[in-house]
Image (tube, rainbow, N blue to C red):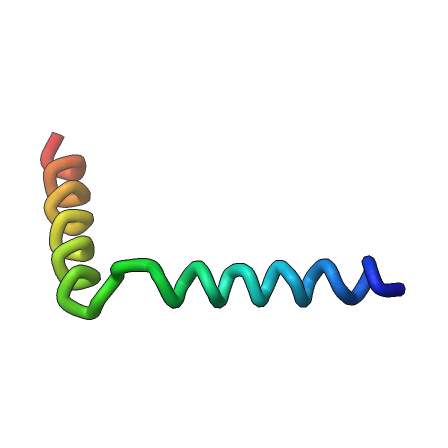
Length: 46
C-alpha cells in the first residue's frame, strides 16, 4: 500500500522540487517560443 500510494507522491514531490530550481522565467519562455516559431517557419518553407 505504501509503494502503491507513496511512489506517485514521492515522484510528485521530486518534480516540484526540480521545477523550483529550474531557471525558466517568463522572458526565457518567450525566447524559446520565438526560436520554435522560427524553426517551424523554416521547415514549412523547405
